[in-house]
Image (cartoon, rainbow, N blue to C red; front, side, top):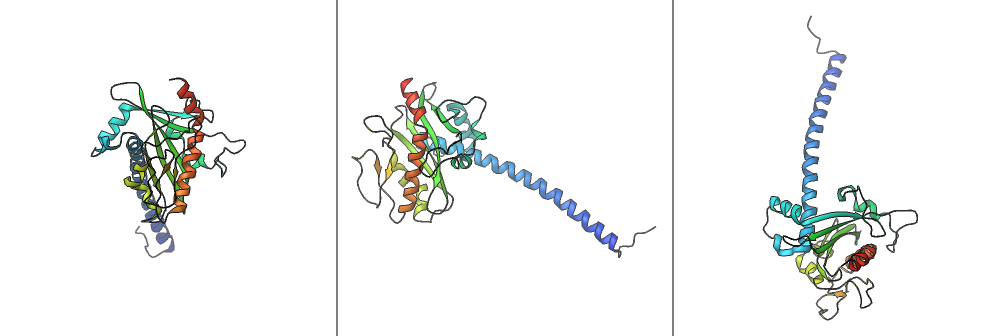
Length: 253
């Protein structure tokens, strides 16, 4: 017996079959793309960590080389608000954006919240000695979220380098935080004062000024004052959050 293809039942059934087949295909493609995107995000994280600490050493490296170097030289930890390592929690389980929401506007931890802070210890070549301490940061710029990594030298005071990125800052203005020319201004600056208290490093208003003799200031970005304020708040907030670990690590040296 042949099917009547003109009936409503046949048309409905055929449409349902097409929808189901397309749904399965889309799910498969989406899953494959999601896995690839996750791998790219993971590689970018490792690249930023190495870039903030090793700088030009990773210039020209392939993705495979970056992954191998990271595996060889970087130790990962997650800290609590007291600077103590949290057992059984990996850095990939910590979402910076979610942890950021646990902070008040002044950077203090909201009452009743427990924050988790990833930290990356970059070992010296062929040694277990920690050469750099890399600390992720998260904040808000002019229009949307900004984030980055600050690498401290083994003295836990001098900045080896920073990497900054953003979601929606203005091209040619606030978006310049991604430029090496801007990020390199932080190299060699110190985050603590003579008493050892963390005072961070401030991007000053305006551009074209000389701050070579000011250890806690860097030149600003003309026309991007509010983005600079966001970067300043982010860096100060997170350096202070990492303060207990920094102090403990100094004492253990």
